[in-house]
Image (cartoon, rainbow, N blue to C red; front, side, top):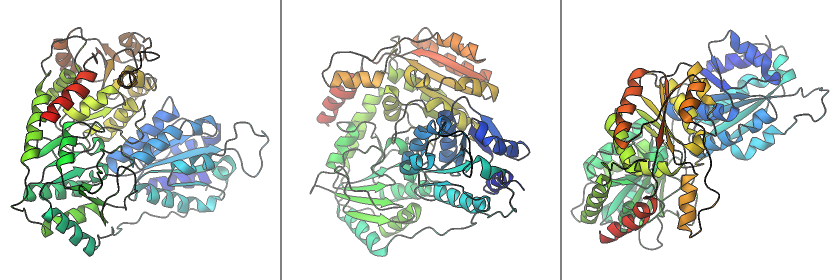
Amino acid sequence: MKAAALFVKALEAEGVHSIFGVPGEENLDLVEALRDSSIRLIVTRHEQAAGFMAATWGRLTGEAGVALSTLGPGATNLVTAAAYAQLGAMPMLMITGQKPIREHKQGLFQLVDVVDMMQPLTKYTRQLVSAATIPARIREAFRRAEEERPGAVHLELPEDIARDSVEEAILLPTEYARRPSPDDAALVQAAEAISKARHPILMIGAAANRQRTTVALRAFIDKLGIPFFTTQMGKGVIDEDHPLWLGNAALSDGDFVHRAIDAADAIVNVGHDVVEKPPFLMRKGRRTVIHINFSSAEVDAVYFPQIEVVGDIAHTVERLTDALQAQEHWNFSFFDRVREAFHKQLEEHASDDRFPMHPVRVVDDTRSFMPDDAVLCLDNGMYKIWYARYYRARQPNTILLDNALATMGAGLPSAMAAKMVYPERKVLAICGDGGFMMNAQELETAVRLKLDLVILLLRDDAYGMIRWKQAEMGYADYGMTFGNPDFVKFAEAHGAHGHRPGSAGAFLPTLQRVFDAGGVHLIDLAIDYSDNHRILNEEIRRLSAAV
């Protein structure tokens, strides 16, 4: 059989359902092999969007999503998506084409060393130099992508290798793999440190977002009564309506959550590492930080834990729960005051009638309508902080934030992939005008795929987060504003439906109406970020200091 056909059969053996990508001359044999396969080829308008979709597929399913490109510029367009998956621990396989390696007649035309380029951005990258190695290379790529810590992998399939003849020999995935168990001595140390502390606190990060870990953490919290907070990428691991939830570390410092961190003398850090932007946990000599993760901690100026329990996270939490009892000397009264002050601040501005809309009102209206299992996919911008702080996630993987690479342009492609994974759920892409326009062309893809998808475009005609930072640094407003198209007409030109609420009161009915209607809808909503400084700086610090 042709090697390209063997490649596709190996992908089928891995359970691949869909491939996202842009075809090119050098991968036409692979595209032809897909024609009669069980795998759906989803043609996007840009390779970066294909990569974002594949990464999100991996994030939601645990199975590596697959992105396809040709050589040269097609492959370089996958670079940002590779970093997005690698830093965000999302399993993804990228397949790129290449010129014939035995003989080609085009000199250096479009020739880039893609394998070398992908080396620092992936867990595994190889050029296929023999058709006979295809099954082993694909099996290894998927194993690397999906094992903890998940991430990006890459295979390059040259044109002449794809056309070679080869015997079929598929390697099937391993049915069961034992996860490493935590060290007994480390568990004893961790349990003793938690028991002896007076003000222990639990921090939940991205790697805790696994079904068994969620169950284990809920049992830990309910048995011991230890308050918890989450990182941005840990949102929803535990229902944020839980009475012991202290909030989200959406800001790096100075927030209510950080007042609780400052008061804690033992921090149990489950599933977080320094790739995900951390709160500033470390104050040398003042507290014990306990690291619970699949891998040991990467030491950093803001993170150097004293105790590390390395192994399967769920198993570690289960054993800690069994080893611990609630202690009479534990004192959470300060945490209770922090929670009360935080929740009081959350309630402010929820009914603010100003227009353009106040971000708290936008978040509150969104939360009031969206079901608990709805999926929100956020691009990167000022609104991400507001949603991280104010939107209470009630189930895992229901608010997808990227706080590792924190790239713009991922919101719409991510939402498209989420809708494909969960066709029965409501999915909302939340984008700023800056980030949306970086992959706005995928509106056509969403319409072509007949997705029921809503895009909430928060328009401030500027790079709002950087504008806020510019003001924070004392610089005059400069270089942050831009013009925009008429987004309603833009949506309609792509075959979608466009809407522009004219008042704060009109937003929620519009949101309800477009979800009921089905199809692809874009809501162009003007947003007022003038309170960024007051609420995220002056008000938070004043109130948290009062606590």
